[in-house]
Each structure stands twice: as structure tokens, then as C-alpha cells.
Image (cartoon, rainbow, N blue to C red; front, side, top):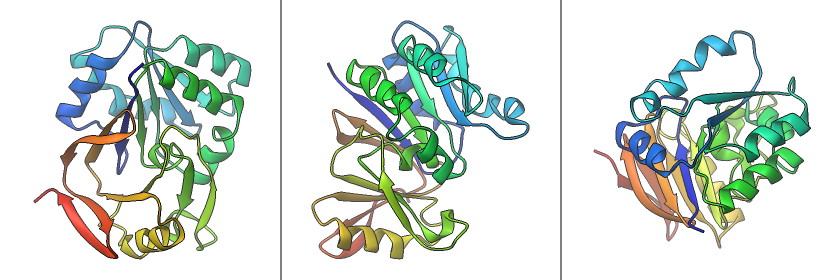
Length: 219
């Protein structure tokens, strides 16, 4: 079964072309939006759904963590036609999803062809390695922990230009030389088909190659 992953370098919305591509790949069932709950989250959800509604009539299911019970979250994930993992505090997303039955359920449906999109924190926790930079950590040092494992041998840095994350990407490249390392700007998305980068859209994408950080997409 083909696998489909979309990584975005900031919060919503989807970029235009990737929104259409994502919906074309969805299966029968609602798009499940998984979020680390915070005050006022309901009012923010249209930022995720607005562009998708142009192409999608199957409805949306919201999975706020940790309020929803894990078993209920797993049930809804397994009934999903698509998955979105929201942005926010990456450490909370890693705690609630990575290396849990929720993460296992996401990985299961992903392998069955259900497209998964991760925005900022959602993108960071989706590969095997989740690396949280000093800019994304209240204690101001980088943290590495286990991710969901949807992508192998790939590492991300998000809000790349906006937060000057090149040093973080270099740190990742030095620590994990066998991986491919991508820096993703805000308002930018990457589409991975069967674990390989196929399409890019938005402001800028960077990659570490032979010790140099090179822009591979964008103006």
C-alpha cells in the first residue's frame, strides 16, 4: 500500500496545491485532527479545515489530547480517511502521541494508505527521530526523543528561516549522518510518497548536503 506524508514548516493552513493533493488521497471516513488541547482550540480549527472544505465533504473529527480517552482516540483514528497532527508545543505532542497506542494507531492507518499531515510540531514528531530545538524548548536546550516512525532516516527543522534554525540542522546532520535533513520555512509544505520527497510548495526548503546547507526549493 502506498504511504503519504505531508510535512509543513509552520501552523495551518495547507498550501494550495498540497491541500488538493491531500484530499484526493484521503480514504472513506472523516479527516481526524489530532491536537494537544489548549484554551480556545475550537476557534482555531477552521485554519486547518478551510482549504480542505473546498475539496472534501466527508467531515472532520477532532481528537483533543489528553482529554479524550486513549481507546476512543484510537477508535477514531482507525476510522479516519485522513489524519492531521496539529502544531503547538512539540514536547507535549511527543508525550501524548509518540511511543503510545495513539502513535501506533496513526502508524497503522498510514501503512494502510491513509494520508497523514503534520504541521510544525506534528511534522517534528512524525519521523523515527523527533528533535526539538532550543527555540522550541522552554529550557533552551535541544532535546531528542523517539518519534512516531512514519518516515525513516529523515530529520526535520521547522520555522527554519524565521527562527534561524540552520545551526540546529547542522547539529542534526552531525549527530545522524545517515539521515536526510530538511529545513522547512513557514507557509511551506513537503509531500513524501513512500518515504521519499516528491513535491514541495511554499517559501523555502533547505537540505544539508556535504556539510553545506543549501536551498532546494523556493525563491
